[in-house]
Length: 494
Image (cartoon, rainbow, N blue to C red; front, side, top):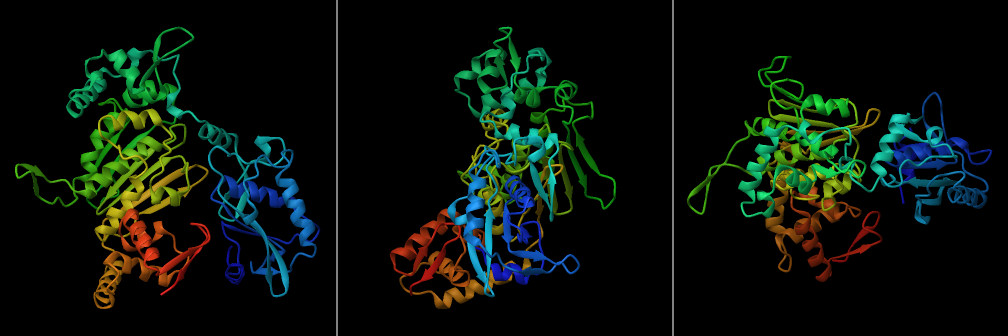
Protein backbone atom coordinates (compact mmCIF):
# COMPACT_ATOMS: atom_id res chain seq x y z
CA UNK A 1 0.00 0.00 0.00
CA UNK A 2 1.12 3.53 -0.69
CA UNK A 3 2.05 6.03 2.02
CA UNK A 4 -0.95 8.35 1.74
CA UNK A 5 0.39 10.72 4.41
CA UNK A 6 3.54 11.25 2.39
CA UNK A 7 1.54 11.94 -0.78
CA UNK A 8 -0.80 14.46 0.85
CA UNK A 9 2.06 16.16 2.70
CA UNK A 10 3.77 16.71 -0.67
CA UNK A 11 0.91 19.17 -1.27
CA UNK A 12 0.55 18.70 -5.00
CA UNK A 13 -0.38 16.37 -7.82
CA UNK A 14 2.26 15.12 -10.22
CA UNK A 15 2.47 12.81 -13.22
CA UNK A 16 1.67 9.80 -11.01
CA UNK A 17 -0.84 11.27 -8.53
CA UNK A 18 -4.38 12.43 -9.30
CA UNK A 19 -6.81 13.76 -6.66
CA UNK A 20 -10.59 13.61 -7.22
CA UNK A 21 -13.16 15.20 -4.90
CA UNK A 22 -15.91 12.63 -5.69
CA UNK A 23 -18.64 14.50 -3.75
CA UNK A 24 -21.45 13.62 -6.17
CA UNK A 25 -20.31 10.05 -6.81
CA UNK A 26 -17.67 8.69 -9.15
CA UNK A 27 -16.44 11.48 -11.43
CA UNK A 28 -16.32 10.62 -15.14
CA UNK A 29 -12.85 12.15 -15.33
CA UNK A 30 -11.62 9.38 -13.01
CA UNK A 31 -11.96 6.89 -15.86
CA UNK A 32 -10.01 9.15 -18.19
CA UNK A 33 -7.23 9.13 -15.60
CA UNK A 34 -7.52 5.34 -15.24
CA UNK A 35 -7.03 5.00 -19.01
CA UNK A 36 -4.20 7.55 -19.01
CA UNK A 37 -2.27 5.89 -16.16
CA UNK A 38 -2.74 2.42 -17.66
CA UNK A 39 -1.48 3.54 -21.08
CA UNK A 40 1.51 5.45 -19.69
CA UNK A 41 3.47 4.58 -16.54
CA UNK A 42 0.79 3.88 -13.95
CA UNK A 43 -0.23 6.10 -11.05
CA UNK A 44 -2.42 6.58 -8.00
CA UNK A 45 -5.96 8.02 -7.94
CA UNK A 46 -7.17 9.44 -4.61
CA UNK A 47 -10.95 9.76 -4.22
CA UNK A 48 -12.04 12.13 -1.46
CA UNK A 49 -9.15 14.57 -1.94
CA UNK A 50 -9.47 17.93 -3.65
CA UNK A 51 -6.78 20.15 -5.10
CA UNK A 52 -6.75 23.86 -4.28
CA UNK A 53 -6.72 25.52 -7.71
CA UNK A 54 -4.58 28.41 -6.48
CA UNK A 55 -2.02 26.80 -4.16
CA UNK A 56 -2.21 23.29 -5.72
CA UNK A 57 -2.39 21.93 -2.17
CA UNK A 58 -4.05 18.52 -1.67
CA UNK A 59 -6.90 18.79 0.85
CA UNK A 60 -8.49 15.57 2.23
CA UNK A 61 -12.30 15.81 2.51
CA UNK A 62 -13.16 12.11 2.61
CA UNK A 63 -15.78 9.88 0.99
CA UNK A 64 -19.05 9.30 2.87
CA UNK A 65 -20.37 6.04 1.41
CA UNK A 66 -17.17 4.11 0.71
CA UNK A 67 -18.79 0.66 0.32
CA UNK A 68 -21.23 1.95 -2.28
CA UNK A 69 -18.48 3.74 -4.20
CA UNK A 70 -16.18 0.71 -4.08
CA UNK A 71 -19.01 -1.39 -5.52
CA UNK A 72 -19.54 1.15 -8.31
CA UNK A 73 -15.83 1.09 -9.14
CA UNK A 74 -15.71 -2.70 -9.49
CA UNK A 75 -18.97 -2.86 -11.43
CA UNK A 76 -17.62 -0.34 -13.96
CA UNK A 77 -14.24 -2.09 -14.20
CA UNK A 78 -15.90 -5.41 -15.00
CA UNK A 79 -18.30 -3.91 -17.52
CA UNK A 80 -16.72 -4.03 -20.99
CA UNK A 81 -19.23 -1.42 -22.14
CA UNK A 82 -17.60 1.06 -19.72
CA UNK A 83 -13.94 0.04 -19.67
CA UNK A 84 -12.08 -2.06 -22.24
CA UNK A 85 -9.78 -3.83 -19.75
CA UNK A 86 -9.84 -4.32 -16.01
CA UNK A 87 -6.15 -4.43 -15.08
CA UNK A 88 -6.73 -4.04 -11.31
CA UNK A 89 -6.59 -6.67 -8.57
CA UNK A 90 -8.24 -6.47 -5.14
CA UNK A 91 -5.02 -5.13 -3.64
CA UNK A 92 -5.10 -2.14 -6.01
CA UNK A 93 -8.35 -0.62 -4.63
CA UNK A 94 -8.75 0.03 -0.90
CA UNK A 95 -9.85 2.53 1.76
CA UNK A 96 -7.36 4.45 3.93
CA UNK A 97 -8.12 6.56 6.99
CA UNK A 98 -6.58 10.02 7.14
CA UNK A 99 -7.46 12.48 9.94
CA UNK A 100 -10.76 10.66 10.58
CA UNK A 101 -11.62 10.88 6.88
CA UNK A 102 -11.93 7.90 4.55
CA UNK A 103 -9.97 8.12 1.30
CA UNK A 104 -10.39 5.58 -1.53
CA UNK A 105 -7.04 4.73 -3.10
CA UNK A 106 -6.81 3.24 -6.61
CA UNK A 107 -3.32 2.10 -7.63
CA UNK A 108 -3.30 1.80 -11.42
CA UNK A 109 -0.35 -0.19 -12.80
CA UNK A 110 1.05 0.26 -16.28
CA UNK A 111 -0.88 -2.08 -18.56
CA UNK A 112 1.19 -4.63 -20.43
CA UNK A 113 1.51 -4.13 -24.17
CA UNK A 114 -1.08 -6.85 -24.97
CA UNK A 115 -3.72 -4.93 -22.99
CA UNK A 116 -3.00 -1.49 -24.41
CA UNK A 117 -4.79 0.60 -25.44
CA UNK A 118 -6.96 0.66 -22.32
CA UNK A 119 -9.93 2.88 -23.22
CA UNK A 120 -13.32 3.93 -21.86
CA UNK A 121 -16.60 3.49 -23.69
CA UNK A 122 -16.96 1.72 -27.03
CA UNK A 123 -14.94 4.03 -29.27
CA UNK A 124 -11.23 3.30 -28.99
CA UNK A 125 -10.29 6.42 -30.92
CA UNK A 126 -12.25 8.70 -28.59
CA UNK A 127 -11.83 6.86 -25.31
CA UNK A 128 -8.05 6.29 -25.16
CA UNK A 129 -6.03 8.62 -22.94
CA UNK A 130 -2.43 9.04 -21.82
CA UNK A 131 -0.69 11.04 -19.13
CA UNK A 132 1.70 13.88 -19.91
CA UNK A 133 3.06 15.44 -16.72
CA UNK A 134 -0.10 16.31 -14.71
CA UNK A 135 -2.55 16.28 -17.62
CA UNK A 136 -4.66 13.49 -19.14
CA UNK A 137 -5.03 13.95 -22.89
CA UNK A 138 -6.93 12.07 -25.59
CA UNK A 139 -4.60 10.02 -27.78
CA UNK A 140 -4.14 10.70 -31.46
CA UNK A 141 -4.91 8.03 -34.04
CA UNK A 142 -1.17 7.64 -34.60
CA UNK A 143 -0.56 6.86 -30.91
CA UNK A 144 -3.38 4.30 -30.85
CA UNK A 145 -2.06 2.57 -33.97
CA UNK A 146 1.37 2.38 -32.33
CA UNK A 147 -0.16 0.62 -29.30
CA UNK A 148 -2.04 -1.77 -31.58
CA UNK A 149 1.19 -2.67 -33.42
CA UNK A 150 2.90 -3.38 -30.10
CA UNK A 151 -0.11 -5.43 -28.99
CA UNK A 152 0.42 -7.99 -31.74
CA UNK A 153 2.05 -11.31 -30.83
CA UNK A 154 4.11 -11.32 -34.03
CA UNK A 155 7.16 -9.14 -34.40
CA UNK A 156 6.70 -5.80 -36.17
CA UNK A 157 9.47 -6.56 -38.65
CA UNK A 158 8.11 -10.00 -39.65
CA UNK A 159 5.76 -8.36 -42.17
CA UNK A 160 6.37 -9.67 -45.72
CA UNK A 161 6.65 -6.75 -48.17
CA UNK A 162 4.82 -7.94 -51.28
CA UNK A 163 5.53 -4.70 -53.14
CA UNK A 164 9.33 -4.95 -52.66
CA UNK A 165 11.52 -7.24 -54.77
CA UNK A 166 14.42 -9.19 -53.32
CA UNK A 167 16.69 -7.43 -55.84
CA UNK A 168 16.11 -4.13 -53.99
CA UNK A 169 18.28 -5.32 -51.08
CA UNK A 170 21.89 -4.19 -51.07
CA UNK A 171 24.09 -7.04 -52.36
CA UNK A 172 27.27 -5.67 -50.77
CA UNK A 173 25.62 -5.53 -47.33
CA UNK A 174 24.46 -9.13 -47.67
CA UNK A 175 27.94 -10.15 -48.78
CA UNK A 176 29.57 -8.47 -45.75
CA UNK A 177 27.04 -10.06 -43.40
CA UNK A 178 27.68 -13.53 -44.83
CA UNK A 179 31.43 -13.07 -44.44
CA UNK A 180 30.98 -12.22 -40.74
CA UNK A 181 28.54 -15.12 -40.35
CA UNK A 182 31.07 -17.61 -41.79
CA UNK A 183 33.80 -16.30 -39.50
CA UNK A 184 31.58 -16.54 -36.43
CA UNK A 185 30.00 -19.88 -37.41
CA UNK A 186 32.48 -21.54 -39.81
CA UNK A 187 30.77 -24.96 -39.77
CA UNK A 188 27.15 -23.79 -39.89
CA UNK A 189 25.07 -25.53 -42.58
CA UNK A 190 23.53 -22.22 -43.68
CA UNK A 191 26.93 -21.01 -44.83
CA UNK A 192 26.66 -22.99 -48.08
CA UNK A 193 23.13 -21.88 -49.02
CA UNK A 194 22.50 -19.50 -51.91
CA UNK A 195 21.55 -15.92 -50.98
CA UNK A 196 17.79 -16.41 -51.35
CA UNK A 197 17.67 -19.49 -49.09
CA UNK A 198 20.05 -17.87 -46.62
CA UNK A 199 17.90 -14.74 -46.34
CA UNK A 200 14.81 -16.89 -45.72
CA UNK A 201 16.58 -18.82 -42.96
CA UNK A 202 17.71 -15.72 -41.06
CA UNK A 203 14.29 -14.00 -41.33
CA UNK A 204 15.27 -11.34 -43.90
CA UNK A 205 12.93 -12.77 -46.55
CA UNK A 206 9.89 -15.04 -46.83
CA UNK A 207 7.72 -16.62 -49.49
CA UNK A 208 4.54 -14.65 -50.18
CA UNK A 209 1.35 -16.71 -50.48
CA UNK A 210 -0.24 -14.17 -52.85
CA UNK A 211 2.24 -14.52 -55.72
CA UNK A 212 4.37 -17.48 -54.64
CA UNK A 213 7.55 -15.37 -54.84
CA UNK A 214 10.16 -14.59 -52.20
CA UNK A 215 10.04 -11.00 -50.91
CA UNK A 216 11.96 -9.18 -48.18
CA UNK A 217 10.45 -8.96 -44.72
CA UNK A 218 10.32 -5.51 -43.14
CA UNK A 219 13.25 -6.57 -40.95
CA UNK A 220 15.19 -7.69 -44.03
CA UNK A 221 14.59 -4.37 -45.79
CA UNK A 222 15.66 -2.36 -42.72
CA UNK A 223 18.73 -4.54 -42.22
CA UNK A 224 19.93 -4.94 -45.81
CA UNK A 225 18.05 -2.41 -47.95
CA UNK A 226 19.21 0.85 -49.51
CA UNK A 227 18.10 4.10 -47.90
CA UNK A 228 15.79 5.07 -50.79
CA UNK A 229 14.07 1.65 -50.78
CA UNK A 230 13.63 1.75 -47.01
CA UNK A 231 12.20 5.28 -47.13
CA UNK A 232 9.61 4.24 -49.72
CA UNK A 233 8.15 1.84 -47.14
CA UNK A 234 9.10 3.58 -43.86
CA UNK A 235 8.99 7.36 -44.50
CA UNK A 236 10.07 8.19 -40.91
CA UNK A 237 13.20 6.00 -41.10
CA UNK A 238 16.31 7.89 -40.02
CA UNK A 239 19.66 6.90 -38.44
CA UNK A 240 22.06 9.58 -37.21
CA UNK A 241 25.34 9.46 -35.28
CA UNK A 242 26.99 12.76 -34.30
CA UNK A 243 30.20 13.55 -32.45
CA UNK A 244 30.83 16.87 -30.72
CA UNK A 245 34.34 16.38 -29.36
CA UNK A 246 35.99 19.69 -30.18
CA UNK A 247 33.70 21.95 -28.15
CA UNK A 248 32.05 23.35 -31.28
CA UNK A 249 28.28 23.63 -31.71
CA UNK A 250 28.56 21.82 -35.03
CA UNK A 251 29.42 18.12 -35.03
CA UNK A 252 33.02 17.07 -35.69
CA UNK A 253 32.04 13.69 -37.17
CA UNK A 254 28.74 12.37 -38.45
CA UNK A 255 27.23 9.20 -39.94
CA UNK A 256 23.74 9.67 -41.35
CA UNK A 257 21.52 7.18 -43.20
CA UNK A 258 20.85 9.80 -45.89
CA UNK A 259 24.50 10.59 -46.65
CA UNK A 260 24.31 8.90 -50.07
CA UNK A 261 27.82 7.41 -49.95
CA UNK A 262 26.81 4.20 -48.16
CA UNK A 263 23.74 1.94 -48.01
CA UNK A 264 22.02 3.66 -45.05
CA UNK A 265 20.69 0.36 -43.63
CA UNK A 266 20.71 -0.86 -40.02
CA UNK A 267 23.46 -3.47 -40.48
CA UNK A 268 25.96 -1.10 -42.07
CA UNK A 269 25.08 1.68 -39.61
CA UNK A 270 26.00 -0.53 -36.66
CA UNK A 271 29.47 -1.30 -38.03
CA UNK A 272 30.12 2.28 -39.14
CA UNK A 273 29.21 3.64 -35.70
CA UNK A 274 30.29 1.05 -33.12
CA UNK A 275 34.04 1.79 -33.26
CA UNK A 276 33.39 5.54 -33.15
CA UNK A 277 31.28 5.11 -29.99
CA UNK A 278 33.99 3.16 -28.16
CA UNK A 279 37.06 4.94 -29.56
CA UNK A 280 37.80 7.14 -26.52
CA UNK A 281 37.12 4.55 -23.83
CA UNK A 282 40.23 3.47 -21.94
CA UNK A 283 41.39 0.02 -23.07
CA UNK A 284 43.02 -2.35 -20.63
CA UNK A 285 45.78 -4.48 -22.19
CA UNK A 286 45.63 -8.22 -21.45
CA UNK A 287 46.54 -11.52 -23.09
CA UNK A 288 44.26 -14.48 -23.67
CA UNK A 289 45.97 -17.86 -23.35
CA UNK A 290 49.23 -15.95 -23.17
CA UNK A 291 49.17 -15.34 -26.92
CA UNK A 292 46.27 -13.25 -28.23
CA UNK A 293 46.09 -9.57 -27.31
CA UNK A 294 42.70 -8.54 -25.92
CA UNK A 295 42.30 -4.76 -25.52
CA UNK A 296 38.51 -4.83 -25.15
CA UNK A 297 36.68 -4.47 -21.84
CA UNK A 298 33.20 -4.63 -20.32
CA UNK A 299 32.56 -0.93 -21.06
CA UNK A 300 33.07 -1.49 -24.79
CA UNK A 301 30.81 -4.52 -24.60
CA UNK A 302 28.07 -2.56 -22.80
CA UNK A 303 28.24 0.27 -25.36
CA UNK A 304 27.97 -2.17 -28.24
CA UNK A 305 25.01 -3.82 -26.52
CA UNK A 306 23.33 -0.42 -26.03
CA UNK A 307 23.71 0.45 -29.73
CA UNK A 308 22.33 -2.94 -30.77
CA UNK A 309 19.40 -2.61 -28.35
CA UNK A 310 18.41 0.76 -29.82
CA UNK A 311 18.38 -0.74 -33.33
CA UNK A 312 16.53 -3.89 -32.19
CA UNK A 313 13.85 -2.20 -30.06
CA UNK A 314 13.19 0.98 -32.06
CA UNK A 315 9.75 1.65 -33.48
CA UNK A 316 10.72 2.44 -37.07
CA UNK A 317 7.22 3.76 -37.72
CA UNK A 318 7.88 6.46 -35.11
CA UNK A 319 9.15 9.97 -35.71
CA UNK A 320 12.68 11.42 -35.45
CA UNK A 321 14.50 8.12 -35.94
CA UNK A 322 17.51 6.82 -34.01
CA UNK A 323 19.90 9.55 -32.90
CA UNK A 324 23.22 9.03 -31.10
CA UNK A 325 25.14 12.01 -29.77
CA UNK A 326 28.68 11.65 -28.45
CA UNK A 327 30.35 14.43 -26.50
CA UNK A 328 33.36 14.41 -24.20
CA UNK A 329 32.81 11.55 -21.72
CA UNK A 330 29.11 11.18 -22.55
CA UNK A 331 27.04 9.17 -25.04
CA UNK A 332 23.30 9.72 -25.52
CA UNK A 333 21.27 7.11 -27.41
CA UNK A 334 17.71 8.00 -28.43
CA UNK A 335 15.21 5.93 -30.40
CA UNK A 336 11.49 6.09 -31.23
CA UNK A 337 9.12 3.91 -29.23
CA UNK A 338 8.38 3.20 -25.57
CA UNK A 339 9.36 0.24 -23.39
CA UNK A 340 7.30 -2.88 -24.05
CA UNK A 341 7.97 -4.03 -20.46
CA UNK A 342 8.25 -2.13 -17.18
CA UNK A 343 11.42 -0.02 -17.02
CA UNK A 344 12.35 -1.65 -13.70
CA UNK A 345 11.99 -5.08 -15.31
CA UNK A 346 14.34 -3.98 -18.09
CA UNK A 347 16.89 -2.81 -15.51
CA UNK A 348 16.52 -6.03 -13.49
CA UNK A 349 17.16 -8.12 -16.60
CA UNK A 350 16.06 -11.61 -17.63
CA UNK A 351 13.07 -10.52 -19.76
CA UNK A 352 13.37 -9.93 -23.49
CA UNK A 353 10.52 -8.56 -25.60
CA UNK A 354 12.11 -7.32 -28.81
CA UNK A 355 9.95 -5.07 -30.95
CA UNK A 356 11.88 -6.26 -34.03
CA UNK A 357 12.46 -9.97 -33.52
CA UNK A 358 13.89 -10.58 -37.00
CA UNK A 359 16.51 -7.84 -36.61
CA UNK A 360 17.34 -9.25 -33.17
CA UNK A 361 17.81 -12.70 -34.72
CA UNK A 362 20.00 -11.38 -37.56
CA UNK A 363 22.24 -9.56 -35.09
CA UNK A 364 22.45 -12.50 -32.68
CA UNK A 365 23.54 -14.86 -35.47
CA UNK A 366 26.74 -12.78 -35.76
CA UNK A 367 27.09 -12.45 -31.96
CA UNK A 368 25.77 -8.89 -31.70
CA UNK A 369 23.23 -8.25 -28.92
CA UNK A 370 23.05 -11.98 -28.28
CA UNK A 371 22.46 -11.82 -24.52
CA UNK A 372 18.68 -11.93 -24.34
CA UNK A 373 17.14 -9.62 -21.76
CA UNK A 374 20.39 -8.53 -20.07
CA UNK A 375 21.45 -5.44 -22.04
CA UNK A 376 20.22 -2.64 -19.74
CA UNK A 377 20.80 -4.72 -16.62
CA UNK A 378 24.43 -5.25 -17.63
CA UNK A 379 24.78 -1.57 -18.52
CA UNK A 380 23.84 -0.52 -14.97
CA UNK A 381 26.11 -3.16 -13.48
CA UNK A 382 29.14 -2.13 -15.58
CA UNK A 383 28.63 1.58 -14.84
CA UNK A 384 28.40 0.82 -11.11
CA UNK A 385 31.47 -1.40 -11.21
CA UNK A 386 33.50 1.35 -12.88
CA UNK A 387 32.31 4.08 -10.51
CA UNK A 388 30.49 6.07 -13.22
CA UNK A 389 27.35 8.09 -12.61
CA UNK A 390 24.30 5.83 -12.97
CA UNK A 391 22.87 5.65 -16.51
CA UNK A 392 19.79 7.81 -17.03
CA UNK A 393 16.76 6.31 -18.79
CA UNK A 394 14.14 8.81 -19.95
CA UNK A 395 10.88 7.65 -21.53
CA UNK A 396 8.77 10.39 -23.12
CA UNK A 397 5.49 10.34 -25.01
CA UNK A 398 3.98 12.32 -27.86
CA UNK A 399 6.25 11.59 -29.63
CA UNK A 400 7.22 8.30 -27.99
CA UNK A 401 10.96 8.09 -27.36
CA UNK A 402 13.45 6.31 -25.14
CA UNK A 403 16.67 8.11 -24.27
CA UNK A 404 19.64 6.54 -22.49
CA UNK A 405 22.33 8.93 -21.22
CA UNK A 406 25.69 7.35 -20.42
CA UNK A 407 28.16 9.49 -18.50
CA UNK A 408 31.77 8.44 -18.04
CA UNK A 409 32.24 10.87 -15.15
CA UNK A 410 33.00 9.35 -11.75
CA UNK A 411 30.18 9.23 -9.22
CA UNK A 412 32.25 10.71 -6.39
CA UNK A 413 29.50 10.53 -3.76
CA UNK A 414 28.82 6.88 -4.56
CA UNK A 415 32.50 5.97 -4.50
CA UNK A 416 33.06 7.70 -1.16
CA UNK A 417 29.99 6.01 0.33
CA UNK A 418 31.16 2.59 -0.87
CA UNK A 419 34.62 3.14 0.56
CA UNK A 420 33.15 4.11 3.93
CA UNK A 421 30.79 1.14 3.86
CA UNK A 422 33.62 -1.25 3.00
CA UNK A 423 35.75 0.11 5.82
CA UNK A 424 32.88 -0.36 8.26
CA UNK A 425 32.22 -3.88 7.00
CA UNK A 426 35.83 -4.90 7.58
CA UNK A 427 35.29 -4.11 11.27
CA UNK A 428 31.71 -5.32 11.72
CA UNK A 429 31.76 -8.51 9.63
CA UNK A 430 30.45 -11.34 11.80
CA UNK A 431 31.74 -14.90 11.80
CA UNK A 432 28.76 -16.60 10.11
CA UNK A 433 28.20 -14.01 7.33
CA UNK A 434 30.31 -13.63 4.22
CA UNK A 435 31.05 -10.17 2.77
CA UNK A 436 28.13 -10.03 0.30
CA UNK A 437 25.65 -11.27 2.92
CA UNK A 438 26.76 -8.54 5.29
CA UNK A 439 26.54 -5.86 2.57
CA UNK A 440 23.00 -6.97 1.62
CA UNK A 441 21.96 -7.05 5.29
CA UNK A 442 23.30 -3.52 5.76
CA UNK A 443 21.18 -2.23 2.84
CA UNK A 444 18.05 -4.05 4.08
CA UNK A 445 18.50 -2.48 7.52
CA UNK A 446 18.50 0.97 5.90
CA UNK A 447 15.44 0.26 3.72
CA UNK A 448 13.04 -2.50 4.78
CA UNK A 449 11.02 -2.34 1.51
CA UNK A 450 13.91 -2.51 -0.97
CA UNK A 451 13.75 -5.20 -3.69
CA UNK A 452 16.57 -7.51 -4.80
CA UNK A 453 17.08 -5.66 -8.15
CA UNK A 454 17.44 -2.35 -6.31
CA UNK A 455 19.89 -3.92 -3.83
CA UNK A 456 21.90 -5.02 -6.87
CA UNK A 457 21.99 -1.44 -8.20
CA UNK A 458 22.76 0.01 -4.77
CA UNK A 459 25.76 -2.25 -4.18
CA UNK A 460 26.92 -2.57 -7.79
CA UNK A 461 26.87 -6.38 -7.71
CA UNK A 462 24.93 -8.81 -9.88
CA UNK A 463 21.36 -9.77 -9.02
CA UNK A 464 22.33 -13.46 -8.86
CA UNK A 465 24.90 -12.59 -6.17
CA UNK A 466 22.22 -10.65 -4.27
CA UNK A 467 19.80 -13.60 -4.55
CA UNK A 468 22.44 -15.98 -3.15
CA UNK A 469 23.19 -13.58 -0.30
CA UNK A 470 19.47 -13.23 0.55
CA UNK A 471 19.09 -17.01 0.51
CA UNK A 472 22.04 -17.28 2.92
CA UNK A 473 20.60 -14.61 5.22
CA UNK A 474 17.26 -16.42 5.34
CA UNK A 475 18.86 -19.79 6.02
CA UNK A 476 20.97 -18.31 8.82
CA UNK A 477 17.94 -16.69 10.40
CA UNK A 478 18.83 -13.04 9.83
CA UNK A 479 15.92 -11.89 7.66
CA UNK A 480 12.39 -12.81 6.63
CA UNK A 481 10.39 -11.39 3.72
CA UNK A 482 6.73 -10.61 4.38
CA UNK A 483 4.43 -9.91 1.45
CA UNK A 484 5.09 -9.96 -2.33
CA UNK A 485 8.39 -9.25 -4.08
CA UNK A 486 7.12 -5.79 -5.00
CA UNK A 487 5.36 -4.20 -2.05
CA UNK A 488 6.49 -6.50 0.75
CA UNK A 489 8.84 -5.70 3.63
CA UNK A 490 11.92 -7.22 5.23
CA UNK A 491 11.87 -8.31 8.88
CA UNK A 492 15.26 -8.19 10.63
CA UNK A 493 15.34 -11.22 12.96
CA UNK A 494 18.82 -10.76 14.40
